[in-house]
Amino acid sequence: MDTAETRRLPMYGAGELTFPVLAFGNDEFFDRDTHWEEHSHPTHELLWNETGAGTAFIGRRAWPVTGRVALWIPAGTPHTGRTPAGSRQRA
Picture 1: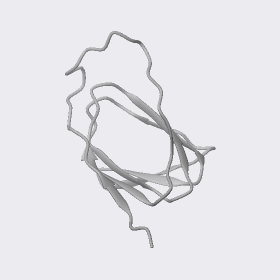
Picture 2: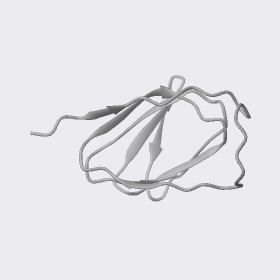
Picture 3: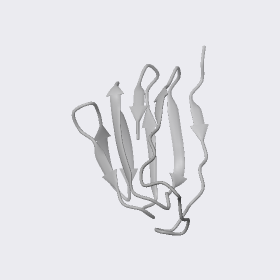
């Protein structure tokens, strides 16, 4: 039986890092339930699940992340998240 995976990412303030590109994309298929510990990004993030439905947690709010509902997370915003096995997530 597969167990859930937890990922740890760093905390960044908005604009803390500079990047030589204007946009960066990520596409990942999850073969097991995955949870991200609290983290933030130095750039804004647009997040959606192409398949499956995940959840992002910002403060006390839970936001659905699906193929029909994308989530814009401003740079420097602390957040956590989870997505079930079988999901394909894009950012």
